[in-house]
Length: 112
Image (cartoon, rainbow, N blue to C red):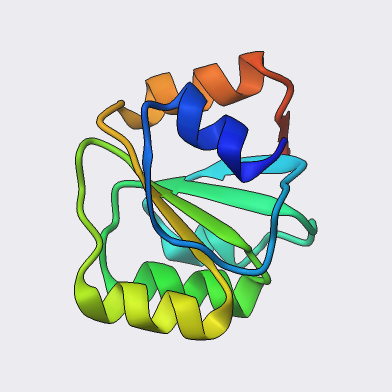
């Protein structure tokens, strides 16, 4: 699934565009310790945690895209660091549950 499809499917807005243009797996969590257990490539992280911790965790886990749910907004610092790390950030008004369901329905595979 490419980032354009994620953005349009979730009524989203890209605030940072990284190096990855497509993802194959999705993981939804607000617990960054759970994110660090992932061993998949081409993962999009859906979370309501709009903090630097989400960006740093995504970088450590090799995640190329973060979707911030529930109208959460990325700070300028988050955007700057995500851009530096090559991570895309997308903001959506949808809940974590709804955004996950939509992407799964459109073919995104779960990590577990």
